[in-house]
Amino acid sequence: TSHRSGLLRHFTLGEKITLVRSWRGHEQVVADVSFDATGSLVATGSVDRTAKVWDFHGYFCTHNFKGHAGIVSLARFHPARLQLVTIADTEARLWDLESSACVGVMKNHLASISSMCFGRVKTQLFEL
Image (cartoon, rainbow, N blue to C red; front, side, top):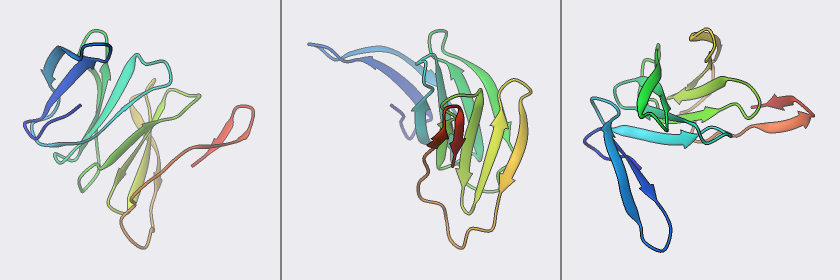
């Protein structure tokens, strides 16, 4: 979970809900949190216009992506590649986790992007 303070919180969900750990995620409000397919990485988007990738077991930042002009409202991992898609206003960016570079920008939406999902079109081919 996330909080207005910029803290991220890890809870276990069982018979009893237990707070495992809290750590500072961003300097401003965290707008979105999502896991990768393996459950070992967490992505966050923030009002501070950055997206970060976290090692979920070590609670440390592995990537800090900058380049959006607005609030990063959505962050989703590619289901089959080490890539992350982030959304800010009318722009989507594709980041490669191996090179830590922005490898694509999708612009020209007529209004702010409110949702996204990956669709499998072939065995290892996905579209956004």
